[in-house]
Length: 433
Image (cartoon, rainbow, N blue to C red; front, top):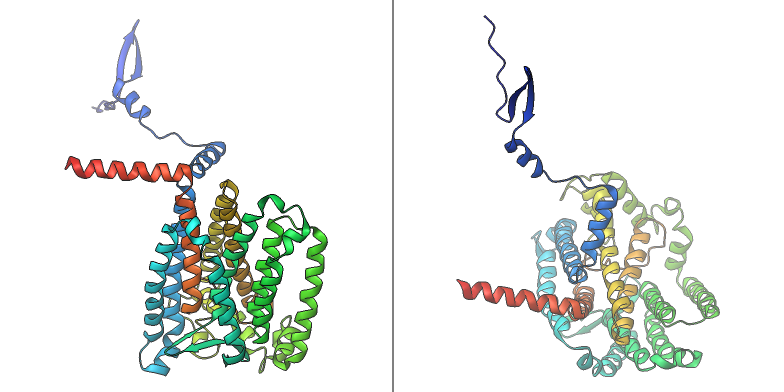
């Protein structure tokens, strides 16, 4: 005898006029109501827009992106420097330990910059600007020459690059000047004086040390600041012609630089000379593929790739983490840029606006030059990747500048109210225990 089919506990049998009708039980209806509805494409867009409109979004985007870049940087410095560090000191961790020491020094600087008020900071712009010019002057005439660039200054046991400090000091100084002239920036002479002569002086001192890469970053900051304050277009045409003439003149005066500029489109022509670094950087990126060889598995860091943990760390990153890793790093820089531009657009303080734009021009411009250099889209000019490459002279000013804009994000009215509410809620929770 066949067994009757067992009904689900969610179904009820009801007979009407001799007909059996199966209905869904109330319990089944309740379970259906608990299901999470699927979001359409417009729903996802609305949800993303709502998340971006929250008062602390900019603050958390900056904290998260900077933290991830610092973490990736430490990991990649440890990996890329391990071979050279072991050969030089007998330990694979000497270089990364120094980088960690610089990071421990940079974090309190960033915290202080995030807490200091813009009014108090603006009192220091002129001393900071004069100090940076003085350090650049000392470097030009008393600096240490490394690989043809006189950009290192030795002060007792400390060796630093004053040009990295000068980038931050000049941005803050220019932002202060333009903030004071906010209502007079419709006149060309107010735009140019004294910012252009001051930044031109710093640029000239950098060029005295034959540091073309850093000079390009200074020029990018100058052009970016002029664009932000609304300089006329003809000024940018003139500036482009001027930088072309200067770059050509510097290239002619240096045979190595001239060879790099002429061979960067096809570095394989000078494979055994000036094209060696560029070619092996491309080899590293090609070896990484989409997903990479894995952390620590780079082959180029064993001696084929010069400056593997400084200027060319992006190549080692591409070899070990692949296309996914390189896109992640670029995406984090773009996220930082997006967050800083949000601050600059939403603030009513002109100093905050100009300082934020200056910092984003500095970081994004330097990142683009470094990545372009590694990809073979620009000549090899010796520019580190911010927050990722080894070097305290770059890490400390960069993280301090980012701490400053994080402070700007904290002081936005809506963000300040949200943070205050979080502190009150936390205090209530502690008191309730």
